Length: 320
Ligand SMILES: [Ca+2]
Image (cartoon, rainbow, N blue to C red):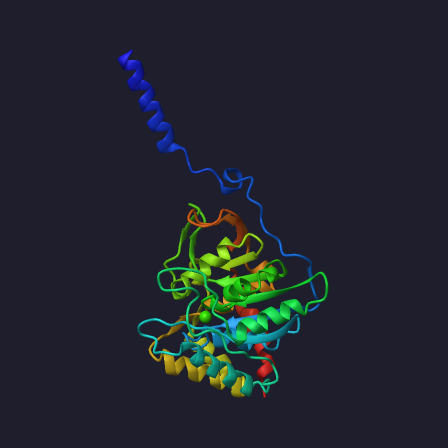
């Protein structure tokens, strides 16, 4: 009897030590993947929400999106990215650069409302909305959609503005498809990591979006976007051909990161992934265990060469 008990214990331990984690598809069959209501217009309406003054990749993302004729860019909203070393008024820093970009592009007619300068809720949690010109703009644009149409909000920074807009007007959530850049994600183990810059900049907003069961959410994790690392010499050679816009982008790289021979263009990777799904596969994954349990879309890889080819072809738009 004693030997049998030991044998059973050994079998139990062996089984659980060796059985791989079940695939997410089988582990959570009842979790629905939210889909936004309606269909996109033609072209797709999109609002870009960007913490432009943080790093330089937002600038390169804006330069790629402005000439894109497959989308109807409704506006560019500015996002905060406050931290202890950032200086204050980070949203105003982002706003200033957005306006510089629109000035160079001769597109000051494009709406560019100011976002919130503080996270959603409080430093210890909460989801009190942070109302701003940006939240008003997002809400108004969604409410102005024709019956049955939805739009994209792409947040390439902390998601304070998008989360606050939904908190202020929850009825807009099903009509939005959200694309965000943030988190790290281990696809093999199905493990999330919220220790990532954009998530740290407003964890309350990130959790708010994860918990919204009526919001279709697509995430480019930095663990994938990191593959989109641009070589400086090649980049500068191309920018030199692109007139005032090219000169501006090169200047910003030199000002911010004069010693870096390469830079990760995190946000540009998400822009490509959205515009050309063939360049970046995505898969449904379950939200983290501490969040409302549902499925969201997570990118799992990207095609560096295809993205680079597309980027520089489109950027010919800026040639004098
Ligand atoms: Ca950004």
